[in-house]
Length: 508
Image 1 (cartoon, rainbow, N blue to C red):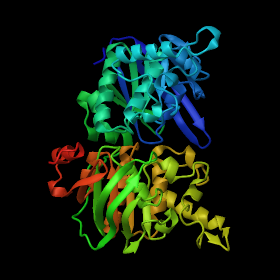
Image 2 (cartoon, one colour; image 1 turned 90 degrees about the horizontal axis):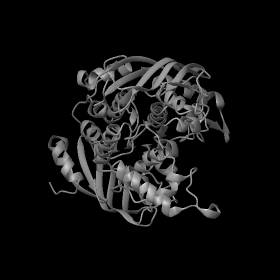
Image 3 (cartoon, helix red, strand yellow; image 1 turned 180 degrees about the horizontal axis):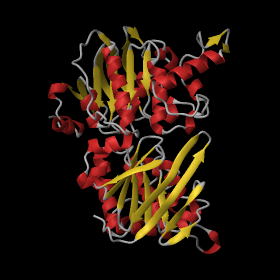
Image 4 (cartoon, rainbow, N blue to C red; image 1 turned 90 degrees about the vertical axis):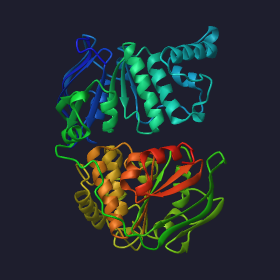
């Protein structure tokens, strides 16, 4: 735990930042003490990332001051922040996959020897020293592309420490981690603070805040609306402070009334990008009016499984039938036209076109059909009216329907996808990590929308690395391990302990 008498190492005073149509930060104050983990909570779009980008020199504030270690700091770029000991680990890692760990760490600050050649031996040795010093064990010679995501995150932390950072900003650091990797990260964070490093920790996961933070600050609508201590807080109290109203943290749903099978999968086999078999003879069915949740530690074939179902990846063997129609080798468009909705794992890669407007993203799966298109010509007014209606109906926070999707917060990007996919007739919904990296208010909204689809008779397949999400949404739970479904349980038998053992490969 941090000492509340420890010196203040970073202070933001009255930070204000405006973008066209948006007041992102409104006179925000913030203090961070030496050796402290300060958690920052807030809805998507509350201004957290904007404030962090200002503290890291990526943005310049319109008003306000930044003080670092007792001195007023003018941060014109990240180089200025790094020079003052501020490092940032972004949610989407800034790594070069084909380079080694050491090469990534020293990039831009290379160790050279006579003749200007990079001294790889010295670089490997320095990375090895840092990893041992801070309990971040990693092979400096490993290629980053070969590392699991948890180890890639360690590389980002070592990068910051190599540049002598003693103030670390971690932006959604557990969004792509398994529970085991997240627990290991928390151990690393504690080791760092024991050595005097100060950490700002941005997350949407309230359990994590209560487990690891020394102090909590909450932003809402660009303003600081409160501070709390974990010992005096609950998930419910923090959620209410974030959203400004009481939030139902448990999914409220009636008992399912399943009908006929809509999705039937028989002995499915799929390869990954390296031509390794990662889905191995998988069989499953999902019935109308039920939610089947697939639980599993990330990396057991779930991504390739969903990509095969939605036409994004070739199938080696096996069969898929949707509403009785053989769809094994269908294209994504043909699958969509079978009334299949898809919430993809990577919303930016497979869910949206970042440079398109919200209105255009709302019709990506049907722009070529009436009423959005006539004689191969888009009807802009109809597309705009559809956008306005869905933005209102699905509570997408945006200045305009013409705003580029890339300018939205994570939760609002997800709402655009949900709005597009749910605003047409649907027989089968495939949702992969439907609430990854979004706030409790948006999670509550999207969970309610998924349950509403089930209640309307849609067959729903939810794939999530968040065990709590699977257990709260699902009517049946299928556990995936090493590319296979090892057990399917009715929700009454799917205890946390039993599913956790199955996820680890135990035949519980």
